Length: 327
Image 1 (tube, rainbow, N blue to C red):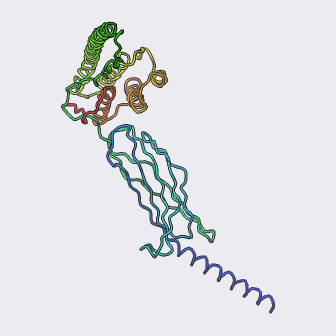
Image 2: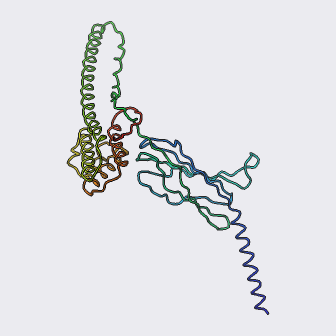
Image 3: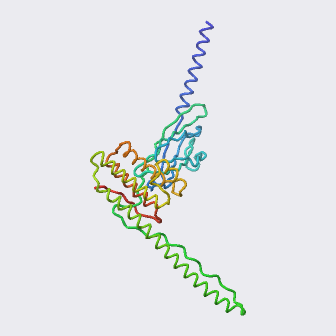
């Protein structure tokens, strides 16, 4: 009889615990939203991703380890403290808002999406839960438009300021006039030399950029029909980029392997996203030429566009988007 009584008491306790646990779980309320600012960007431009979580006030919200995706850098820059609603100000009683801000940098053209972000929570009764968030699609646009082949001038050189004002003293009038005249002559000579040097530099840069673009333009009419044509296309693409890098940055890029070139770019003052574009394109060229791993024609068009981007990113100033289309 005593055993039956103990069993009934245990069953009652378990039933009461299960009912309270289910009731606590049913009170969990979580809503997750995400947004990008801006949602259209260019290569290497930083984009703000905001994850906003609306949840019950008895929950502690956190994020899991970030999923890494090729050609996208995603990093957490701020996890804000929860903001609890105040019903007197129009808020919802028992609700709070927790937000997380991430920085996204993309190194590939087209529509890209960062990896899933896992949102986890811990309730005051010890129960837990999680939900996976897929960030919005980020569109990366090229910086030039189709058919725009005009080269823009280099950014203007800064002009020297006017000579300082001389204090007028009767015993220094003649010396001041002579010094002022000499200063004017020196400035005129210096400006002429700077103008001549800039003109020579602009002409030389325009020449090798024109040569590189001309060789890329020739590839737009090249038909990819078989293994040999693919090998020629990607071999010529790699040669154009290596030759351009060699002249533009002043080191023997044509004599380095792709891995050696990757290390050399890091010390040559090449921008991070431009170096990443160069490394990715040359790696795809190596796969096609040596491993005979050929992509589809649409991907070949994309690689040709990336080659134009590499040359264009070395210029100064801003430019409209450009996209190569092989005929």
